[in-house]
Structure formats: structure tokens, C-alpha cells
Image (tube, rainbow, N blue to C red; front, side, top):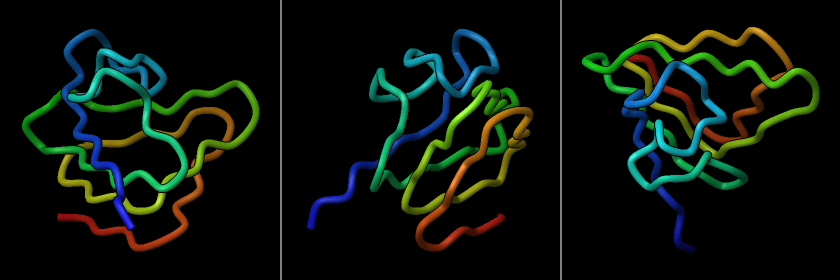
Amino acid sequence: KYTPAFTWTGEVNSEWEEPDNWDVGKEPGDGANVSIPGVCPPAVHSAASGTSSIEQITCSGQLTISGGSLTIDGDSEEE
């Protein structure tokens, strides 16, 4: 099974939902493996309502959840 990988760049702003803040140019969705490196600006997940769902997250940077929810279906790791 192919699992898409998304790496946070924070090039535009701190909004999780901004496609250009991700190396692949779109927001991660179901089944995604997410990496938030420590050298990047903080990421803020602020969906007003609803749930975003990803498979796995590796975070050595900062992630703030300020609205909605973020479900991690698999493993998570803080570096």
C-alpha cells in the first residue's frame, strides 16, 4: 500500500489548510504520513469545525490545534 508523505514547509503562513505550506502543494488527508521539521515555522491546525484525519505524524517542530480536531489513525512520534 502506498502511503503519501507530506512535509511541512510553512512557506506561506502557519495555516495547516494552506496547500502551499506543504512540499507537495496540497493539504494532507486520509492515510497521509506527515512530517513537521523543527527548522520550519510553527504549524497551526485551525479548522473551524470537523475533523482532519492522517495516518502518522512525526513532529520535531511545533503544532498547535486551535479548532476542529486532528485524528491520527496510526503512530505519532515527537523528535
